[in-house]
Image (cartoon, rainbow, N blue to C red; front, side, top):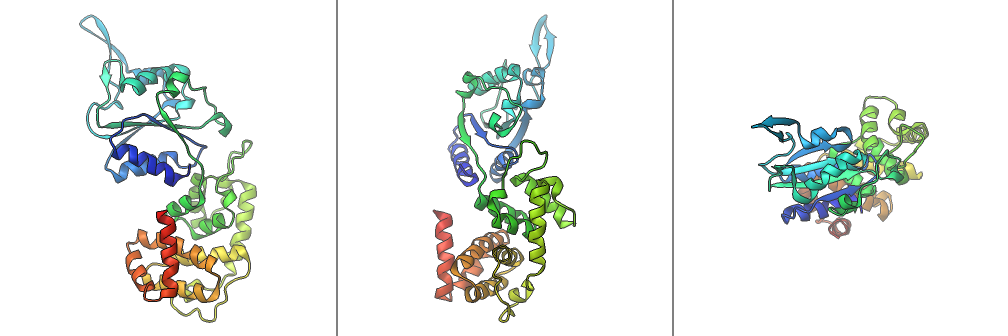
Length: 333
């Protein structure tokens, strides 16, 4: 499933108060932990991130001590008896079998020994499978059977929505839009390869003039540099945003067309600029590019709380308004 579908499923479970332990399978860097954090933040829930692949059994069980001649175990700090939140069991498949075995009681009974997890807490796990090149241990059937399982895959539109809202560099968003197969490509023999997470790091490096090779690998970075050379030859997009683009031609090369649409969307800071770009594209390009622009501009303006005024301005022109209505209907669907 794509990130939008996963968010919907997890949100329904949490909002419905269902404490069914849930596990998210997916390759590295695809956004599993980011999705959990975003869902928690939206609902004011605390997140306790427990990296099971990095802890010994004693950290899960608690340290032993003697009281009144009997051995007991101290409550682990992460096992909260009160409050509300998500207990995020990351890297569960990477955990040694003894830790996975101890987690059975947590998943089944919501407790470790005498210490119980509070009723306000949800349990969500995540991890990679063997097919993702991760060093994992086989998950025991009794552990797996105590959870419901979702399989997350990379999705361009979901990533673009996130990337635009986060303000990733327009060159990064434009390139991945042009080459969507490079949003995620696992290279088992390489340390650096493209993932949603590594593209976000690449955006940070590119923003300060550094090469992105160390984030996405040499081959992908070479393609990205060629794309940036094409972008450098584009017309001044600010003229279009200022309503002075009558003499500006829409480029004929596909990568440049993606760059123009993404660049206009990312630079539209208000409804007037967005409308100027919209009207220019409507006159200079085909309907598929207008629709591409609207989808990205909608996300950009929503992040600035300016989409409502933009939609109102667009609907004064019936021909332009139909594009917005079409994109909105697709998003809702």
